[in-house]
Image 1 (spheres, rainbow, N blue to C red):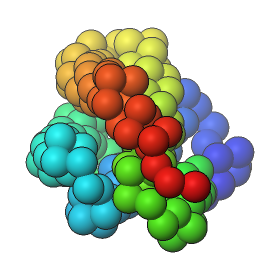
Image 2: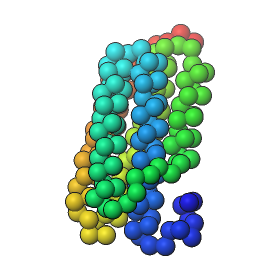
Image 3: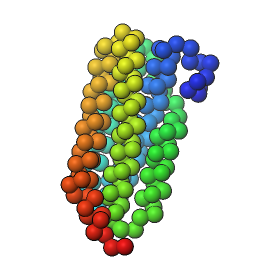
Image 4: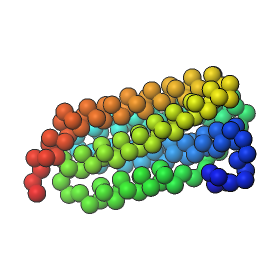
Amino acid sequence: MGLFSKDIATLDDLFVHQLQDVYYAENQILKALPKMAAKATDPELKAGFERHLAETEGQIRRLEQIFQLHGATKKAVSCPAIDGIIKEANEVAGEIGDKKVLDAALIASAQAVEHYEITRYGTLIAWARQLGREDIAALLAETLAEERATDEKLTTMAEHKVNAQAELAEA
């Protein structure tokens, strides 16, 4: 079912489709995070990726709870956006030899993922409220808060340490 397929006729259909999209995205992120942690050389960055891995597992469980509350089938639909973000991250990481520059690139890639998730969860919250599902909106808001906090931690790490170290890398 494509985003604008005939299978999406109502806001509820669109909401469920977007849930399925973000469910797929979270599962892809779950697979990517251990690889990112393994590539990171900054101990704080590595630990951050590992913490976010556990957080992502919780986010997936929360999405499964939302499917159940909403009476929708737990299903993932492919998300070309997250696939593209992860593919780009892998390509960029493969082109960088200096580990300090790689750490800066990993943060940038992780923030691209976080920003994607922030937009999706914000939209889902608005739709859940429109559909009268404050219970589901509250669960989605928990995840949105986690994604925003992760983005802020990445920004702080980049601005206070990692970017400066990358600038000092040998050309």
